Length: 355
Image (cartoon, rainbow, N blue to C red; front, side):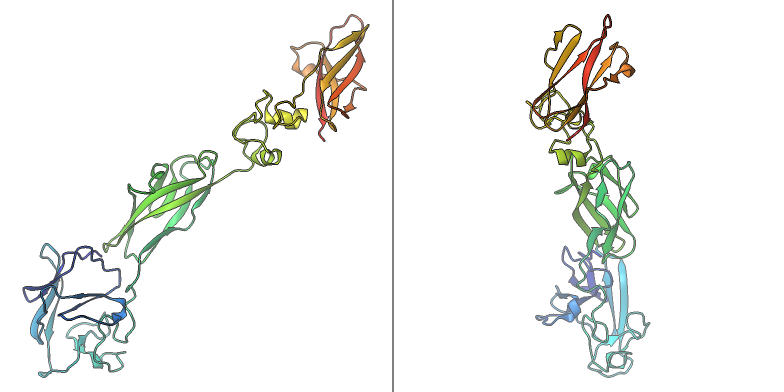
């Protein structure tokens, strides 16, 4: 709770003003001394000395109140000694925190162990639950796979040492680069765009959390976008795992720039997709009567087979030519076939078994 500018009053006299930037965490305590230099741990409570130089509280019916900057009373308490003599101890509630009025002498309170005071702690000397508590904000999960649909839940926010309901918002500042890619659904973070690991493997967002008690915290968070290893991002016929094995790019369909796609080089021709000089090229065929010899560049260990068709307009008309299966043992391979008399034929070389 931000209590900057709040005042501590004795009757209607202002005795202390809480400085700018004073934040009291949920279930924490503040101790205001009348003067001097307070020393000790005080249960990690917020400790200040009266800005007015003293508090001047007596046991004769003084009304001590805390008021906001507008003058509204937040809480008040009447200090009155029912015994008629100085008890030399502090007054407290019994039971601690929840007890009503009138207050009791500290040494008579349940759990006090007959101690006379406990500034900044519970009557038994333990710290208040929120004392020294530093608010923190994290995500239950900060990783999402690429290509997930818009509106996919990434995780829920974990707000520690906040009080009551927490509201979340995106804010400008360092680490806000990708605020626009996400949205909130209550305490959950959702995608508002389809994320692509080929474009960005991590996203930065800047989030502010505010609770009902005035605790506020702004943090920068990193959302990791994981790669889909079975995606064919560049459409070359190789997924990312296969691209990794071949050493080719998953964003460039023709890594070596030879005009033949990586997938065709790996899966169809058996050529090296990293070497622009490793290509499947046919030489000009030679004829000897009805015999035709077809020669092409090859990769040693790859098996090839000749196919024929009577028309280039019939993509389903390609058939294997019997007896033409060849395992390359050099960088050039060839096969000779006889063309039936009077018939027109078209030929192509097909990779059968890769090495």
